Image 1 (cartoon, rainbow, N blue to C red):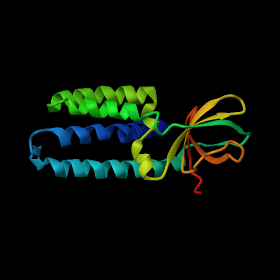
Image 2 (tube, rainbow, N blue to C red; image 1 turned 90 degrees about the vertical axis):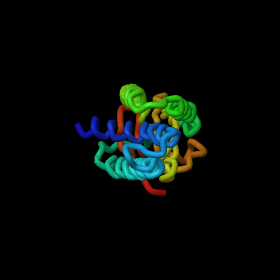
Image 3 (cartoon, helix red, strand yellow; image 1 turned 180 degrees about the vertical axis):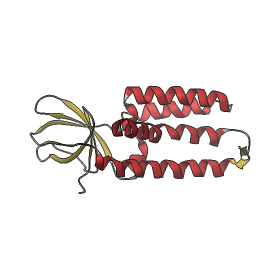
Image 4 (cartoon, one colour; image 1 turned 30 degrees about the horizontal axis):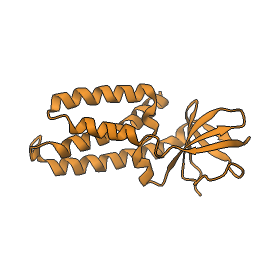
Length: 174
């Protein structure tokens, strides 16, 4: 149950930026009777709070580690940029609330089901980096970490929290 709620939280973190772009782009100066820039600012603050909360909550996920060796590291920071640009371009092309609600719902569901929600660009603001890591067994994992990984020889992850079978967040402070 906690994993499902956590995955919903991560999906919200990853997709709410789409609403920020939508509200910033609408022609009206008022959103629900409020200045649109106040709405945009509030959404940005909510996204930062939710992301910080998701980082806090992950400490309650199950523990794991990758200590038996890493044979390959690949930065994943740039891999997901086209996905987010796609969200933004979709949001820029929508002009009414009903359509935005419908499209956001579809994006939310597909993001949740595809497990692409683990990449949240706001994590970058909190100092996290995204990596694909291949262990000695040849298993490719997605690791969210504050470590700067450059070579495979000195890498070990002893404080991982398991998000799913191949996705982890490194809780060790460096």
